[in-house]
Length: 355
Image 1 (cartoon, rainbow, N blue to C red):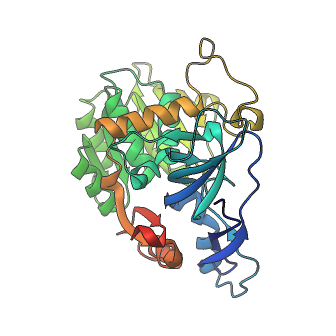
Image 2 (cartoon, rainbow, N blue to C red):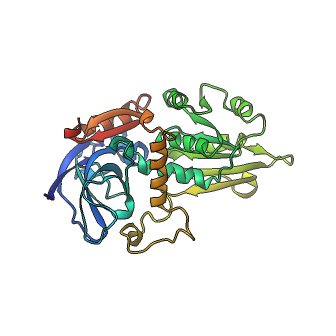
Image 3 (tube, rainbow, N blue to C red):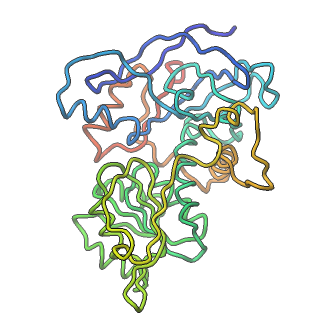
């Protein structure tokens, strides 16, 4: 039986989480109806507004706003135009406005991907952020044997670091929170530096054997001006005193810098979302395709690759989960991220009957 109502995690005007009831969206062309088992909070993108509301002491509840863009569950119905999926398929789903924190989601078929048998729903819920990390690394154009610096060891930074290792690179992570550095050390990153507590320049020099980093990924939100200055100082340095290398900037990062001579020969590269296809409505629903012979990697291809790595044990997302709570307790999860960032990283929301 196809449900008509669903419960959805939302944020109110005070920056607190709550649960509201909505109609289940219509099952239109190219769409898949999924009974969600688990979803993952993206603490940077999703909770920026909540942090600001709490910091400003907002008191008006207002109209709660549903949020979330990555989950995993079981297909229970498909539109007649969809041949790739059928009821009973286990899938990972992604997409703003689609794969929300909810018990039922209607998602375009090209933003769904079958879960390998040995990948759980909770692991599958990491897929959107995993391919955001993958795209950030791809934008940096890693070459095996090179060194990469990851600035910001949140979820995107952690997964970008591991993906760079899969690509054959040596990776160091920077973060101001010692807990995040420890998480990375536990899963096997090559090196870390707690910014503000350790000598970042000296550790970078030792890590790169005096050569400087070949590339970097800056994976955090907010003002990154000072961080970019610090990163520039540890990149490769040519004999004519110009800094060299590629820097990929992902997420809500904002920075001021002097271009041209001010950056030497550094390449700054923006990393937007998860790869080609995402936010192309016609592609998402399968009305049009990007031929693989011309475009090897689409958002869907990235999803398949990330899930393959999870299945093969190369991308360990389970080690990033610090909290698992029922959807009904979403405010507890939101508060943990905002109030206890030194002990909170990956929060998986599960449906009540999954507990």
